[in-house]
Amino acid sequence: MIDFFVALGLVFIFEGMILFISPKRLKQLLKMINDFSEKKIRLIGLFSITIGLIVISIIRL
Image (cartoon, rainbow, N blue to C red; front, side):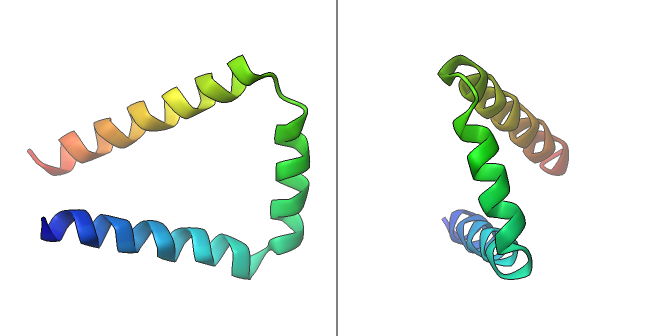
């Protein structure tokens, strides 16, 4: 359970860093994502989930 809270904390840290370091770039990225189809956004999400699971499984070995 502690690992879950550590992971959640890291998510907040990394997302906060993106907002803090380059808010202008983030706004541009969100505008670009708005032009993507829902299917493309879902594929990007699936790819991100897959990479995350691979990283976690490598770390847990």
